[in-house]
Image 1 (cartoon, rainbow, N blue to C red):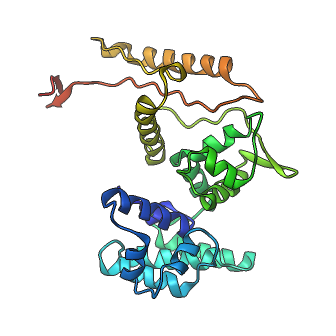
Image 2: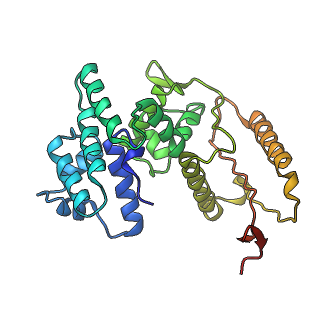
Image 3: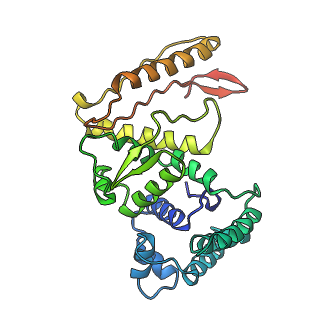
Length: 284
């Protein structure tokens, strides 16, 4: 699924997510071919911007927004929002930031622009944020973004790690401890039984990682099991409460400072039958 610009408060985050989605649909789509589409003479400038090694100038943002507008990836409001985000991130004073925040709010469907709200969205929706928080508890933790990127399997680049650390500090989940980082909260929860795009994105990513672990991790280092049963739906509220209690008790038993690994627990309870006119039926 292509990322939506209104879910982002940083234009580089959006572009990296868009490129990742485009390459997932077409593995042959490269940074070079994207630069050619944008009418850039060479790929180096685009690469440096995406890796946060060069300032993202409005001259480049306008080429990107106009291209997305031309090919139907943006509407007029989305294109202007993207351009305003670039100006917002380049703001040199609080007054200038506030000026662009007000414009950004008028462009969004909900008429609101809050960097903190969007930061929380990103923390929940992108799995590596909470992984970085837990990594600070490792006994051999090194806060260097390049080292963190390597320990995350290279799936998150150094620039994304830096951005994630800044975001985690803003929302209060991490704090600086001299040259290192320290976890500030022992528990971070999202509301239960609330349909939320960020939460769905996080769970989708974790399920994908569980599939990868099924193939790549030895059985001694994982536990992926299943049990299918016929149930009465009246018992579901109690069953979900039991799952929450089990998850919390397991976390209390396993979690420790000075650990040697970061693990994720996924528990799925769902209806395997299809639906027709509100009634369950076997999937053909």
